[in-house]
Image (cartoon, rainbow, N blue to C red; front, side, top):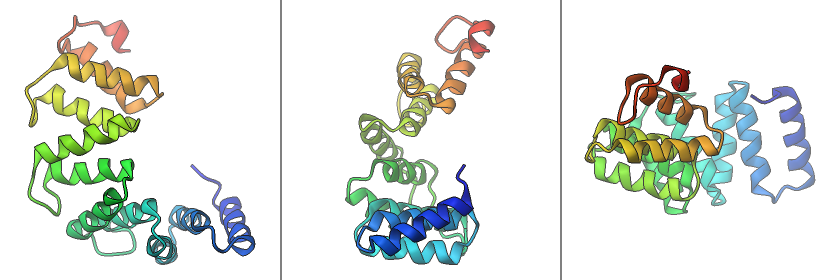
Length: 186
């Protein structure tokens, strides 16, 4: 959802003026990703990651997970996500949690997925609230708890997240732990 041409120009200008600000290198990587120049994105993310920028590490993990400009490699994505998590990046906690939940690049470990989602949810990441809510909704690795799923989805909704809205809507549509209410679902 970025204007690729404007973002690329702004990032190049910022890097020229402030070469020591690692965030600008990271943002240039995002612009390169948006224009599907994955080799350049990887180069920029790697440069930012080498300077300790956790989100750059996370985005390299996403490139390996999605096979963007590199061969899909879940173990590689786990390594990069883990580096970002070690630096405290909550978005990487969600991404690494997903790998543990689904057994991509690691042995499936629902307890570790839940722990990562919980930590990221406490940090205010709506995707973590949604993923954790789905664990409770489905009883996956935790006892099924519709009230907890609803609480988590509502927390994500308060932050304006559409995935949480959708999942709470499904709960109303299906009557999962709450009275079926098609109007509310809609």
